[in-house]
Length: 131
Image (tube, rainbow, N blue to C red; front, side, top):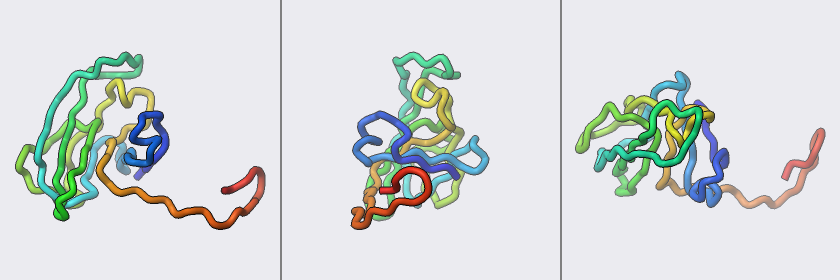
């Protein structure tokens, strides 16, 4: 699995409110959540990218058991609205669209509370500085 918080310059990543998540097979997205699919919407992406294979994306909204809503992008869904999802279910196939072309195949996930611990100690190791 490949996980990235800040590989993108999009505001949700810069503000630490989104992450990009891939899978071991780098082809299919497997749900890290339990929940219910509330909405699926296909839309055209109007930004050019020479690496893109398609010009569309999908918005998938998943309501978690705790009531929180999760937004998932860059996945062509195999699931339908109203479907109950378990952790590990195959939700769909990663898209190579204008948002993801040239990057690692991934799902964009928003709606999680992402907190990084505050640094209290400064430590230098090897070459460069670790902060």
